[in-house]
Length: 321
Ligand code: AKB
Image (cartoon, rainbow, N blue to C red; front, side, top):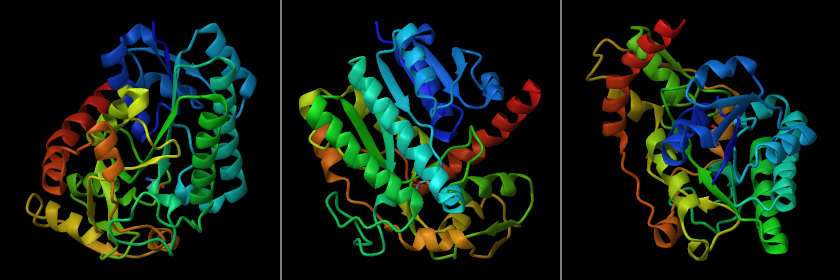
């Protein structure tokens, strides 16, 4: 019987992926964990434990005592936050991954999932349809840690046979959790402002086109990768993954028909420098070839669904208070 531990479960990806994992494995088979004790309220449907991913012995105790067979290691310091505390973000993003790679080896875990990012590419990478093996010279603390992490994943697979699998996520857009420290988080916050009848101040220039993905596609890709037969996995660093690309102006224009009075201003800040070093679009042919990846959402469908569902979600969260 599989027993799945999710770290950083209260984050944007974890909030939705944990729910989906209970659909796949059953509520008794999934343990949500987060460093924030208050995150327990997010997981009424499964076990919740407080876990600091920097505490290797606590991680070890949980994996051993709970007979964990798979770990989705989602806890991370994202790009914008990492630039404010580069050395702390390196320790959190790297040490926690190395803890889990070692524990996956020690306990012979069936599988380990770890998200990488488009942040592994840098200003010298091709901007359009960036290929899997393009030059990767990241210039952010987050990108450096993600690139190093990819190499450790490939090393632990090669040296010890650890079945660790990874995706280079684009900006992820979900409405079931507030964003936390990412350069692409503007694309979540804008919906809350539109629904609240407020104007939106974009911290990126209007023409800053970035690879993006609606959360249901990110969940679909994560599960498809993890459920693929081992012999279909040809990339053990991390797979390029794509769905769509858009700029703040394109997103705003897509929302405007629903809220004709909605207004946006552009006030680029330090996150513009981060975004300028990232690709505008990604070539994910290896994911499509190896495990039949294909996204379901383009920008119009994502906008329509979020504007339809977010008001209900906000009401649901208010009723929980
Ligand atoms: C971030 O903006 O830091 C993340 C990412 C693109 O990896 N969403």
